[in-house]
View 1 (cartoon, one colour):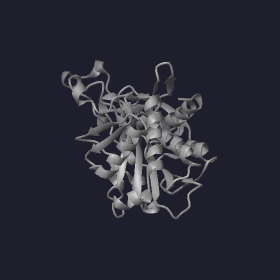
View 2 (cartoon, rainbow, N blue to C red):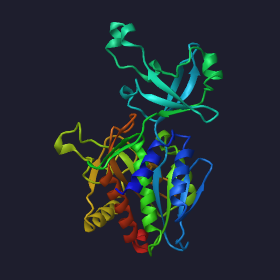
View 3 (cartoon, rainbow, N blue to C red):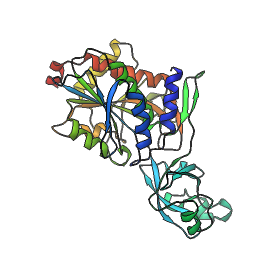
View 4 (tube, rainbow, N blue to C red):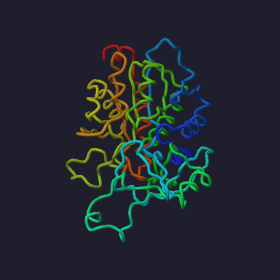
Length: 357
């Protein structure tokens, strides 16, 4: 990846954006896109990136990547000044204790905190032998009373929380570490694809959407589907890589092996003809593609394919190790290939093909 791309990836990854609080991510993406596209937001914090070369009389293709990340929200402030919290999105709970976080207070200040569980020195034998759950954890911001937490630190019930993790690039090994790769790697891939398609002569019109609140049920995607009503949707995701804990024969989303098209998860059976078309395009352009059949998981594709009259959808995913934890790994080349894959798929689309889906 170019140094410029890595700088944008750093800004997107570091941006504070738990579900429902995506405005910082949208601000970064708007800055990236405003020189080649018309950009606007809606009331749920979806960011629409409209290709200026669209004519309005061609089938409309929507590219999607979600801008939110898994996070937390302050539920109560305890008398001792610690914060009880609830998850925004589905977390791997075993990864949470000890995580440094930022609590964004009502003034917009980022208050550092640490997710704490009962110290091992004070655990009973039974407690020491079981994994703590979120209900057993608190966020400690260093306050000694609820009054200090509220009046000195400015923290209130309802304040959003996200991991305090700084992005790092390792170009020598082609990898990146950071938070929110689900789906900020997809956000950058979408932005790169939209830039590449900006001046192309296409048989379709194209609009990109950085959708909000995917981690809490695809709420932004529902709004986007009704507003745009596209012919098809091509989604980007930062999907869980399975190459560090899965037998070789079962690995379907390995890092550094190219993007992945998921053919089945609990939210969607991927449109067979559209998936086949996408894979044929990638093969013809020598873009490596992995395919996966999953017994769990879900993406915004699961929302789009059942909206309106049924929007044929596929999701091109970038394998990312340890998603839904405070931080993880992703490969630079996988991100670039995902952007190239969707760019080439869009360039190959015709009204006749879309009509026959």
